[in-house]
Image (cartoon, rainbow, N blue to C red; front, side, top):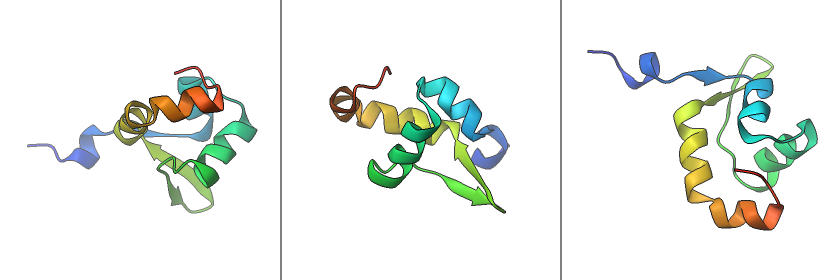
Length: 70
């Protein structure tokens, strides 16, 4: 049986920006100020797709305040 790690896709900055429809600066701000979940692999940021989607669901009201297009 596969574990969550095997099933869950790791996304790059560019993939998350495309998924959320935000700029590089906004993605940085979401990590720093809005609690966007991320991890680091070496010097690169990586994001679990399931965590990003859950974060979006949990933060819809905040997204409206930040004027994001989720």
